[in-house]
Length: 463
Ligand code: B12
Image (cartoon, rainbow, N blue to C red; front, side, top):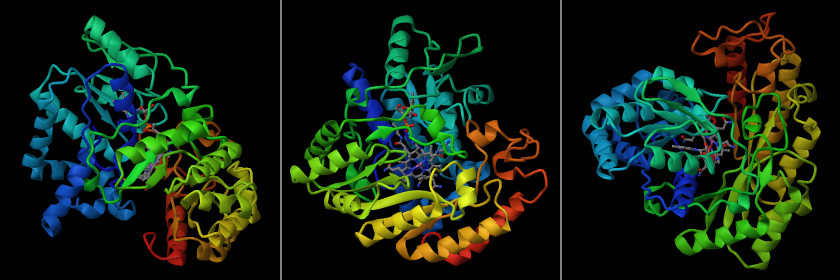
C-alpha cells in the first residue's frame, strides 16, 4: 500500500511495478492507494478538518510540512478513527500472508501509524516496509529497531529481491535476510542481508500494472512510466544517484511497447510522466524513443526531469516537442560557476541559461530547481545565483527552491572536512537541516534568510 503523502496526480508507480512483477511470478496481489483515498476523504471534509491536515497538505511547499510532523499526523489518525479503521479492515479483508508498505519521507508517520494499528488487529501477519524512506541513505534497518511492529524492510531495488524473499518465506514459513532485505527473527534479532545486485536489463521488468487503481480518483489522468534507473552524474549533494549505483536504461522499442500497452488499457488518457532521475541520461536512446513515437503516430504528452547538457539544443528539443514532450523539470541548482563546480554539476551557468531559453523557445514548459545554501555559498556567489534567477525566471512556469539538506550517502556527507562543515550532532533529529560550516558563515538561519530573499524574487513557489 501507499500512504499519504505522495503524488495525487497518478497511481503509485512502485506499486504498479511490484504488482506486475509479483503477478508474473504467480503471486496473488492486491494494491491499496490510501494516499489518494485520504486526499479525497480530506477534500470531502472540506474546511471542517480541524487539525492541520487538509487537501492542501498535498501541495509540497510549507503546507506539506505537516507530513513531517508526528503530532499532526497522530492528531489526524486520532480524529478520523473511523476512516483509519476502514483502511485497516480493507487490508485485513484480503487475508494476505504478508503486507507491504511503499514508503517515502512524506509518508513515514502515516505508514507507521497504519502499520501499528494493523498489527494490533492482526498480529500474525508480517509487515514489510520498502521504498526510499528505508533505503540505507535514509532510515535503513534502524527503523526495525525503533518500531517493533515492523518485521522486515527492503532497502534496495526489489524487482528480483522481493520474489526471492517471498519464495523463501513460502517455503520455510520464516522471513529470511535475502540480499536487499533486513529482517527481525522470531527471537527479535535484526539481521541485515547483503547488498543485492542491480537490475542490469530493465527490458526484462514487466510493464507496470495499474489495474487495482481507478483513474478517475486522481487529480490528473497521468500514467507513470520510467525509461531508466540511476543517473550519469554524481552531484556532490545527491544521495539518489549513489543509491541506484549504475545508470541503466530500457531500450526505446521496449518503452514504446509499454506506452502502446498502457494506452490500450487506459484509452481515457494520453498523458505520461517519466519517473526517471533524468530522462536525458542517454541522448541517443531518447532520440530513438522520440523517433519511434513520431513514426508510429502516437499522440501522447509526456514530461520528466532532465539534466542540463549541451545536447539539449533547439533541433533536439524540437524533436522532443514533436514527440509529445510538454514539460521538462531541470535540476539547475545554481547560477554561480564556482558553486556549480563545487556541486560537481559538470556545466557552467551560461549553458544552463541557454538550455532554459531554448526549451522555452520551442514551446516546452520549463520548471527549474535552485538549491539554496550549499556549502561554499557566500554572499558573492549567492548574488550571482540571484542574478541568474532574475534573468531566467521568464523561461519557467515554476521555480523550485529547496534549501540544501545534508544527505547520508552523498559525496558531501563522506567529505565533511573538505566542505568545512562543523562536526555534525547526529543525535539532533534535524541534523540534515541544521548543519553549519566551521566559520559560521553558512548556518540554517542564513540559509533560511537566503531562501526568503529568492522566494520574494520568484513570488510564491506555487505561482
Ligand atoms: C518521479 C518522482 C516524483 C514524481 C512522481 C510522479 C508520479 N506520477 O509518480 C513527482 C514529481 C510527483 C515527485 C514528487 C515528490 N517527490 Co519524488 N521522486 C521521483 C523519483 C525521481 C522517481 C520515483 C520512482 O518512481 N522511482 C522508480 C521506482 C521503481 O523506484 P521506487 O519507488 O524506489 O521503488 C523501488 C524500490 O524502492 C522498491 N520498493 C518500493 N516500494 C516498496 C514496497 C515494498 C513492500 C517493497 C518490498 C519494495 C518496495 O521496489 C521498487 C522497484 O525496485 C524519485 C527519485 C528516484 N530516482 O527514485 C524521487 C523521490 C522518491 N521523491 C522524493 C520526494 C522528497 C518528493 C517530494 C516530497 C518532493 C517535494 N518536496 O515536492 C514530492 C512528493 C509528492 C507529494 N505530493 O507528496 C524523494 C523521497 C525521499 C525519501 N527518502 O523518502 C526521492 C527519493 C527523491 C530524492 N532523492 O530525495 N517525485
